[in-house]
Image (cartoon, rainbow, N blue to C red; front, side, top):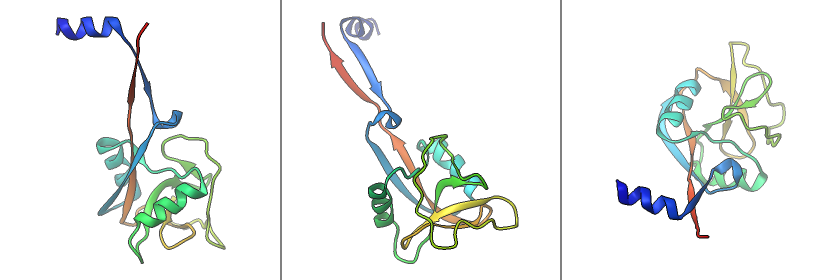
Length: 140
C-alpha cells in the first residue's frame, strides 16, 4: 500500500466521465423488465438507462436492437425527462407520439425507427450505458 501511495504522490490523475465526453459503452439487456426495474438494474450493474443525445447516437442504438424488438431507453414521464438527469433536448418521436398512456407514467421505446411510448409497467428489454473513467497521467 505504501508503494501505491508513493506512486500517486508523483503523478496527477484526471478522471473523465461520459458526461464530459469520455467513452460510453451501450449494453443491450434482453431480460424483460418494467421501466423502473430496468433503471434500477442499469444503475446497479452499469450506469443508467441509455440517453440519446444525437441522431448519430440514435442510429447506433437502433442498430443494436433486433428487428421487431422495442426496448426501453431512459426517457420517461409527461415532461419527458432523462433518467440520468441530463438536460438533453434531442427527440425522435414517431408521428403522433408521445402519447400519455392514461394508466400512469409513460416511458419511451426505441426500435425499428422513430420512438414510441408505452406504460412504464410494461415489461421490455432495455439499453443501459456504462461510463468509463480514463486515467491520464501527467508528470511535472
